Length: 135
Image 1 (cartoon, one colour):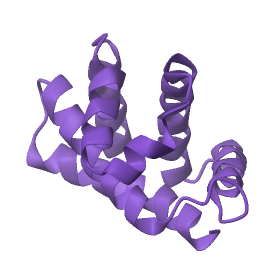
Image 2: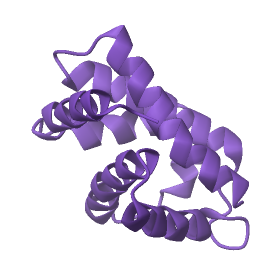
Image 3: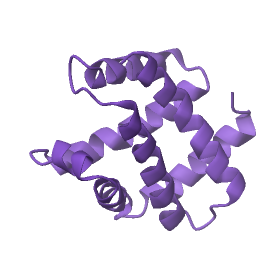
């Protein structure tokens, strides 16, 4: 569980990333380059809508990691939509997702440091572990 200060630092980092107009584009470019199978999953996707979903999803994952009940409901819906009977997203794709996210954050957050990278990893892993468990 994050402390209030860690949560604040993470939110500030996220804010620094999202003010960059290329943050979400860069994330998806990195993510797609990580695996042809991942790129294939998105071939018929409306990427503008997908970027909006990612923006909200990241916010929910951050709030979920600090115990927000409302975020838990959102992450539960995310987990269901990504489970084996729906989008069928295997665990290894989540690993690539986190790696790609960290790379994009490292490009766009000019104040990034090892401590913040660890906080991002730990925070995202909470929600990802939940989603994998629901697979």
